Image 1: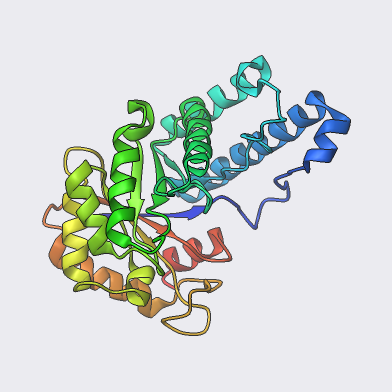
Image 2 (image 1 turned 180 degrees about the horizontal axis):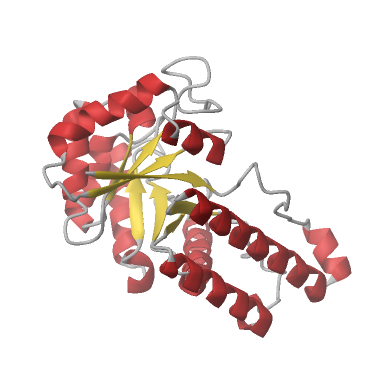
Length: 296
């Protein structure tokens, strides 16, 4: 078994920073100003991946904020047609392929495919289209999302998610992955949707501790089965800031939590050459990865 560790979106070591802007600023400064921010954010991503390559890290979550105001109706700039942006994305994609990197994205909390509000669903699909366009340009392999809200009836909410998922374009549907959360939908419910739709399940170990539904070893085994024939399985791991059931993330991954995950993996992974990707969700990002790689 080979475990590949990754982290999400930002690198605390790199001096360059991501940039965003408010709508009013865009409306006053225009497309060229916005283009400059996008180029900056792509250069930031490039710097992150170069740093990762130097450290042997081959798993990274690309920020959804690369293109500020990406789905706002008043943002009219066709960023994906700009030759400079396209060339930079092509360069990043080539670099990630050359170094065997797995790139993912995680649409935000307002991407709610199971909302009973049709306009919310439409905006959510539009957000996924943005991720698909940028993902195509950068070589992103998958988009991770949650089921969404319960809206007073969890069974109906699960049914709505499946219905909307089945109506998505294949280029989005084929890269969508579903993660259990710590408030609304357990890994057991995610596995139900995986069986119904064929979407792979991402097992979040910390979320499962807060909102359990089955034995973690069984959850891990069943979630791994949903990836068969699609890709190598992914897991999310974080530590609670003040304790095991704290929803807030710790700066690092506690040694006891990482070792607990390893103990769960050993009986589940039966292939010697199986790759397992573990996304570390910690406040200090790459520092959390390097601490584990350095054996704490």
